[in-house]
Image (cartoon, rainbow, N blue to C red):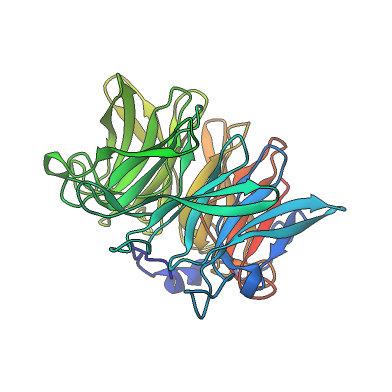
Length: 410
C-alpha cells in the first residue's frame, strides 16, 4: 500500500451538518459520464487521474490490482489506457506491475508514446521508491527502472506527485525526504541521452538556510514556456508553514526563488498543494487545509514589483462546495477546475469550477459524488481537453467499489 506522509485532520462529519441533503438537478446532469468502472483483480483497483494524449486517449495507473507476484493479496497495480471505440470507451490493461510497490500519481508521456511515472516506496535496500518507464514495442509494454532512490549520499527518497515534462523532453519531480539538507526533500531531473538511456540528477536540495527555502515539497510541479519550475512545500519558509517556489536554470545551474511564504491560516497550517500558471504569468493554487473552516482554499498569486500578492478566491466550507481540494486545471477561458476529496452534498467530494464575473470569483459544483456508481473521493484534480471536457478519477466507489474514470461535458 502507498505510504502517505501527510495525514489530514478529519472534520467532515461535523461540517456536513451544514450541507443540504437535497439532490439538485444541476449535479444529476447527464453531462457526467462514467468511462470505466474498475473491477479489481486484473482490471486494477483505485485509479489516479489519467493523462490525456493528443489523440484523446487516456493513460493512467491504479494503486492495486493486477499481478499478485510479490504483491499478494491485493496486487501491485496496473497501467491502463482508455480509448473511444464504437461510441463508447474501452479499457486496455497495458502493464501489470510485479514489484513490491505500486505506481503512484499521474503519468508523463514522451513524443514516442512511452510512459513515465514514480513508485513512492519499495525498490532498493531502503524501499524509498523509483522512477520507471513503460516502453511500447510491437504492442508489448516493458517496464524499465530509470532510477532507484536511495535516500543516501544526497539522493532523494519517497517521490510523491508524479512527473512533469518540459518542451525538450526532460522530466522533473520531487521527493519528500532525502537530499543533503536535513532530510528535507529534493527536486530531480531526468535528461534523455542519445542512446535511449536517461541521466538522473538532483538539481535542488530543500531545507538549507534553516529551512527558509522550504521543507518537504508536496503537490505537482508546473513548468512554464521558459523551462522554469514552480511548486509548493508543506513546511519551511519564513514562517514554517510552507512556500510557493520557483526554480530557474542559468548557465546549467539551478537557483530557487521563494515567491510566497505561508502563515498559519485561522490558526492551522494551510498545506499548499501545487500551483498552475496562466497565460500572463499568474499562479493559482490550492491549500488542503486552512481558511475559516479549516478545509482548504483556492488562491491566486499575482507578480508585483519585488513580491507576489496573494488573493484568496474561495474558502471551502466542507458543505456542498466541498472540502480538501486537490489540484487545479485552467480552461481556455481562464476558468479554474478542480476536485475536492471530501465534502459535497453527500460527503464524498465533488468536481468544481471557479470563474470570475465582473472581478468576483464564484465557485460552483459540477458534480457531487454519492459513493454509488459514480464513485467517491476524486483525487488529483482533472485534465481539460481543447473542447473543454473534463476528465478525472474517483479513487473508490463505482459499480464494483474500486474507483472510476469519468468525463464531464460542461
